[in-house]
Image (cartoon, rainbow, N blue to C red; front, top):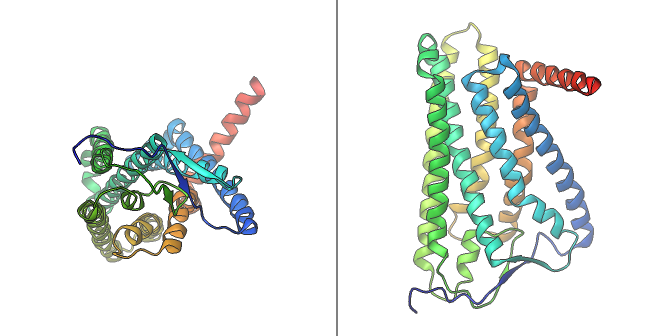
Length: 311
């Protein structure tokens, strides 16, 4: 075959999460509630950090950016999944599938870098407190965020370059509820062994290296906190929230991209967790473990009520 696009498949059919109507109803309610809660919680955090001067610090700047990304994370695949739970025939156009893959990898790439930036922020705050404001200046925070978006988009474009010119001439069934890059590659009408290896090596290595780098970083920070008893309860609470979020983000992705023989049902469960549960748990973890965040949200509610009364 030449380098042109021989794709004749115009749409892909999702096999979905389950064939049981009863389980689909449960998933519909569960996913819908979590989606609404995720959107509400993350919007509240972005809004509170933006308008509350008490939260205008690097840590909350990164938290607001993480919440903004989580808004995207729970909107890329979740609405389509919830909508498809109503339907017997679950389809997505070829262009829609490519767009979904692009945004999934952009969101994942940006979130990965933001989690590293948040870890670096905590390292400087705890290990080099006297230099914190100098190191974590507004310019540095913006550079971290810009780098996160640049790397996320670059990583996603690299994934698309692997599949955009592949010939798809049938079959067109994906055993999933969203466009999963490894499964999509297997539907191509050509030998994709090398491409599958590149995808797993690229995504798997990035995830594993990033995860263990973060893990080592937080271990160093925890040792530093344990050496100094003053203020350690608050520091430990903040660190435990960060570590929990890191685990929630990386564990599902590593299971999906580092196993040579993935299990379909396990991958579906992990994908649902990553698409719906993690964006919901992130604001819950950061809000309930942080007194400043809770106080800021209360102040935001009061301001909204005052504006509503005036209008």
